[in-house]
Every structure is written in structure tokens, then in C-alpha cells.
Length: 409
Ligand SMILES: C[S@@+](CC[C@H](N)C(=O)[O-])C[C@H]1O[C@@H](n2cnc3c(N)ncnc32)[C@H](O)[C@@H]1O
Image (cartoon, rainbow, N blue to C red; front, side):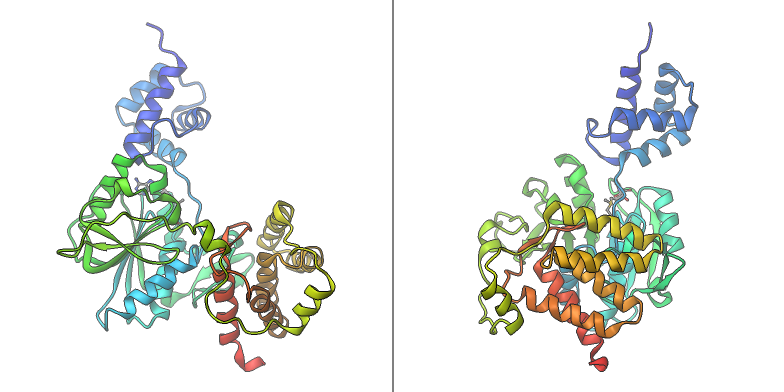
């Protein structure tokens, strides 16, 4: 019998699914074949691939695993999740807090979690970061990152400054985190339960029955007053084990162990509903600033946010920043502000760049501008950028900066 490439690809799909949990149809054939060739040689024949897949050839398993997962992450991703974590640990008193960043990729989430806990006043928290891919864990342990990992504002003391295009994690934060390789489809070895578990941007790649396995594994290591946070995009109520119940939180998918006697209610998506997006905030609005008033009265044009063009330009600028071309990036950001004065992500970027160059006064002015421009916008409205973020994020980042840099007023 002649074994063809289709059968080899089917074997690779099965291997990818068994190993990572993804639906066998998800990884692309081209990616899987490239991975197989990297492990077994350019001239490998389909029959040899099938034999290697069945024998769980170590190199093949590693390459296929790498090919089947998405490793996209950055510091302070999902800022509202970290705010929810901080609020929660403040209710737990002074006990030592332990947290798990499950599927932490290259470590940015685990370090952010440690920094958020420290900023919330936790005394010597401990954070475990785990991921399936050993290379990701090695990168997490190295704790050195490029600009792309720092694409949104640092909300808590987390990083040392940028040196030769590289950011390192502060030693006091590193000291709170350790990493290990672990597959979410397997339970963690028995241990003291976690007060916080974050598992974000991974379940969305898994079919429902696998999500259930992962959530069941988490439930068994969550403390009785612990908090589990998933990301908004990936939660489907069908995969929620009976032992977990959802907490009613704005824009955050948070869960805890089901309390005795609590009724099962239908879990809800954290993605803001249309009405949430268009409703103005309930609180009384302070009067708009004179400058903004003038612009609005003299010029009734809609806000100039730039849409996809602005986002594209912003991504190019991020690459320039990453490769150390900061003065040029700053010039381009200023020019962006002329063209798209309401495009918030570039304004925040510019403020951070000014601040990184010691221009606190300019940075403060931009941060104040962000607060003024967002004053009358619904806090849950999503702002399009390299990463889509709610208005609330820009307000939190600007307010935090202004708080920390008061002395230079
Ligand atoms: C998109 S990243 C998410 C990183 C981080 N949680 C975040 O939200 O920024 C997904 C990570 O899940 C890991 N992963 C995928 N399947 C896994 C599994 N079965 N067990 C553990 N980690 C897994 C991948 O290696 C990858 O690093």
C-alpha cells in the first residue's frame, strides 16, 4: 500500500490534538509538514512520518506541539483582569497569596500577576507560571523581552528600563515567580490550593470536551475563596463544570467554587453588550474642558480616530520602537496626532515614549489629554488599536501615571 501525504497529515493532526488539546482540524497542513520536516529531515516520506507520530518521536512531538499552539502575549494584557485580581486579594486579609498563571506562554502574564499582587499590598506572593512548550518556559525564565511585549502601558512597577532594545523584569518581581512545563490537560501534582488562577487566551483553541477537562483540573486546585479568571473571548457556558459559578463582574470573566445552596444561573459573556457600549456613564459628568468645547463647537466633524490606517501606522511605529529608533517613532507619533487627534492608543504610546526619555512634563500633558478626551465616553467602549482595549484602560493608565508623577506638576 502506498501511503500518501494526506495520511501523514492526518497522523500529525492527531498528534497535535492529543498533545495540546486543539481540534485536529485547526493546525494548517503546511505548518504541520514544515514541523515534521524540521524534526525528521527535508526528505522524510509520509510512511516515516506516520511511524514517527505513532512512536511519539521526541523531536517530532516537540516540533508539532510548537506548530499547534499560538504564543501571543504581552505585559499587562487585559488590565481589567488584573484590577479584579487586586480587588479580590484585598478581601483575603494578610495571608500569603499564591497564584497560577496557567498557559503563561513566555511569562509576561505571570510577571504581571506578581507585580499586580505586590502593588495590591500582598506580602511576598508566590506565582507559578506553567506552559506546555519548554521553549516558552525557557524564555520566561530568561525574563528579557522586546518592545512588542511592552506594547501597552505598565500599570504596576514591573520592568527595568529599556537597554539596547531589551526590557528585563525587576528582580523583586522575578523573585516572586517560578515556572515549569505543564500540560493543562493533566492535573497539577497535589499542592496547596491557589487563591488566584488565570487561564487566558488558550481555552478558545480547545473543543468543549477538552475545555471541561482543563476547567475541572483548575477547580481541583482553587482555594475555597479563590478566584479563577478566564478571558472574555473564550468562555462558553457549556464547558463550565458544576463546581464553578460565575461572579457578576463588568468586563471580567471571573469564577469561584460554587457555594453550598447557590443556584445555578446562566453564565454571561464579558464582552460588552451593544447597550453597554453606547450608554453614557451613569455618574454626573464634569463640564467638558474649554479646549475640547471649542473644538466641538467650531467644528462638528466626528472624532478622527483613523480606523485601520491608524492601527497600521501604529504597528509600524511599534516596530521602530522595538528596533531602538525612538526619536523617529516619536516624530511619527506626533504626526499621527495631527492626522488622527482622537486615536487614543498612539497618544498613550507617545506619552510613554516621552516619559521613557525623561520628558515627564510632555508625558503628563498627553496623559491629561487622554483623561479629557475620554471624559464623556462610555468606559466599556472598545478602542481599536494594535490590541483592542476599553476606554477604561486608557483612563486607568493615564490616571496611574499622573498619580505617580505628581511631584513634577
Ligand atoms: C496565546 S498564549 C496565551 C498566553 C497568556 N495566557 C496570555 O493570555 O497572554 C497560549 C499559550 O497556551 C499554551 N498552551 C496551549 N495548549 C496548552 C496546553 N494543553 N497546556 C499548557 N499550555 C498550553 C501555548 O504554548 C501558549 O504559550
